[in-house]
Length: 82
Image 1: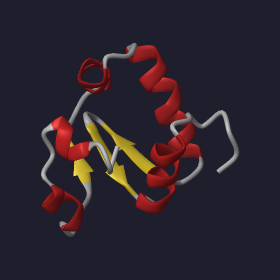
Image 2: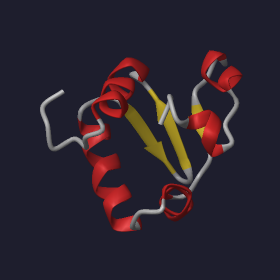
Image 3: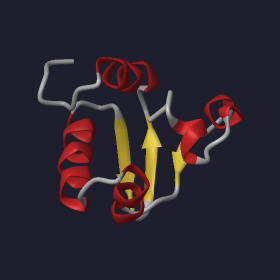
């Protein structure tokens, strides 16, 4: 999400902030990306299990930005090993 975030309405300064918290529901993320909520949920669970993010009610807390950037750069989902 990081490298595409400015095109999704999140300013680059967001990533320099002390806390990297996105306040979106899974449905809102899916709508922004034009994909299903189910796919978003599956990927978020994988990212949480890998320690990249923390999930709370309507909040996504980034714990490992470089790992997420690698996923974005590869254009792949968590189906690959990261």
